[in-house]
Length: 291
Image (cartoon, rainbow, N blue to C red; front, top):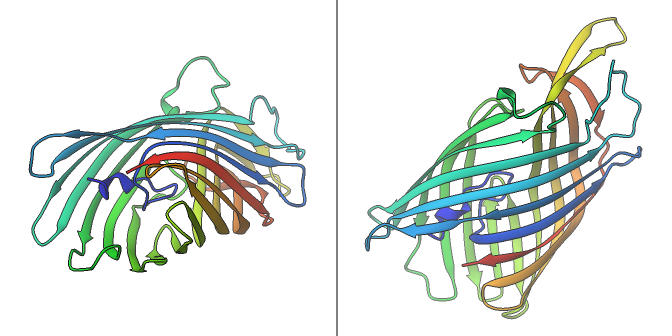
């Protein structure tokens, strides 16, 4: 059950969070643009039987502040900056043979700048995922290891195909662990029970609908219609975690984007305008309640 709670691609598929409150800040280099996000999410497991079967309810909320101060050649600008996301996923997981566990999730959400009147059909997003988790039981504590394989598909999204999740985690020493695969690769050092330090490469992304589409005329006179905004970052960062208790911790990550993409797209997810692709600093911090 703990391993199944990892199912959340925006990245972060190896966490076992019950509640997370987080703030992210990404200033955009070579411009006055910036992106910041407030996020709160939860996973509530419901025990179904004594054989390790659980139903997991996962709500989330995100406030995405995409400050675009560059001059854009649209017919109208309107409230392009603030996007909000409301989501709910329901998962089901059970034990299999040979220390394998199966999990599946279905969910729906709304991600929009809500500049029009009410909620529109294009604001909705739908997602589904399946996972298999292998736990290795023959290791001496505190050494542990697990393998996660699966697929996650979200529609509409800037990437229109199922995203693979393949990750191997191992704590090979009382003071060291590593994780290799997607969407995060990391190495972590445990100073003691309260302090840890890690270095990692991972992903951060954002997607939201524009309720009022924007008309863009390119240099060649071609007219395009922007219907949604997206961000996809590849990040290299260092992180510190401090455990107030065994299950409550503060974390802060600081790094630099290896790839920074903010785009406006049409209904087919084709690029209409690249707002900024210069690499920049990345800051993220928050509090978790985890198991």
